[in-house]
Length: 521
View 1 (cartoon, one colour):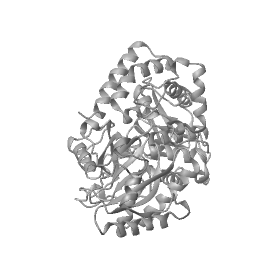
View 2 (cartoon, helix red, strand yellow):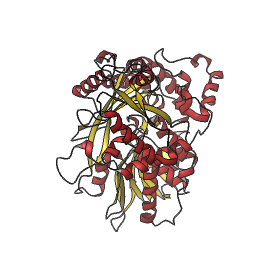
View 3 (cartoon, one colour):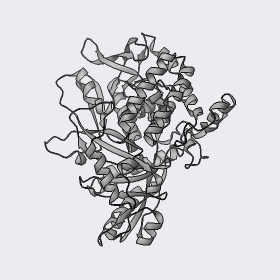
View 4 (cartoon, helix red, strand yellow):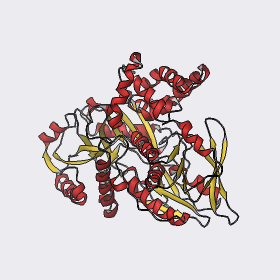
């Protein structure tokens, strides 16, 4: 999967793509796969790396949303639970069952949450991941040895889905390529192209690696840029009404010993009204999230000190051995592209997670909002509308039953290599070519150096950050360890991509600076 092969497809200036998609996160990649699977020609352009912004910074859950059930948004929950089940059918190596417990410290909590989670089970129907049930305090402590036992009345256990967000994004990109699509990272759209009637008919784009510019023609152009949605809408109409109300969410990663088992914790309501999760993930625990409204967005947001303190403080309320700031292995920040409310003063935690689709008078289709769990349904809706806008003959979407790249039923979710699916054996086979790299990259990380070689050869890697942030999740699992392995990772990538020593030096410096945003001091 060489990036250069896809760059070549842009060299033909006479080609008119059926669809040009701007944005390589969950929404854009999903739309690209849907279009390619229907047999249309589709070019996807991402200004950074795939899933570099919001789509690699989730709570690592594929879920219906217990919070939305409490808000009465039944249709959103039902749709998300259905999509959760479809994803597990199409990519069982990527999406799997995770058990959670809602611990109860008040006498009325068990019947209240028990009834709510039974409703959650009922809405899942045939796509259920398992039945909820009420537990005694002793059974809660057996499920979660690290839970705070003082005044614990019991709990309710339920099931939801778990995944690796950046790896799923890459899996979708590779499936899109398998279907004949052309997904490109580090290809920045600089402007929209309009015909004599004023309709959008293409884009101007720059390959950020080579610096070369392109003018590309498309029968339909789709804006699927998440937190950057308004920037692209500005290219079409600088006076458009702002669509996105961004909100920052922070997660921290701690050792599994604080939880003490394989079961996660769900806290239904925090001080700011959000749900907080303790999610077992890749041998660690992801704790999150916060909710902080923002006035602007960027690719690498930074956590606020009060957000870190919020997570540490709430951990102390539910864990018998509460983590200190010094125990935090990494902290990562994502910005939610929430759809702005029509009235002022609405909390971002109350804004809808339904997706929003609009077509401008100049024929720019914009899709925004939504969440990872519903990416496939969003994509189908997007391409259905884009077909009409672009004047294409209609072809139905096959993605409901489309197995994703690497599909296999032979995997072990306790082995981090499960994210590669059927290709895991090919990565291990690289040991015959590089026996010296067949070893862990760090004692505190699960990855081997062979995975860096594989990523450089087959997964569009262009930077050390691509390899250590998203192809492996080293930066999220242990930021200090990731910084320590960056020099060798840079040397491996440089050899594979034909880069010089100056490139290696620059990459190590850039990653060292980046990693500081993930380290709690």
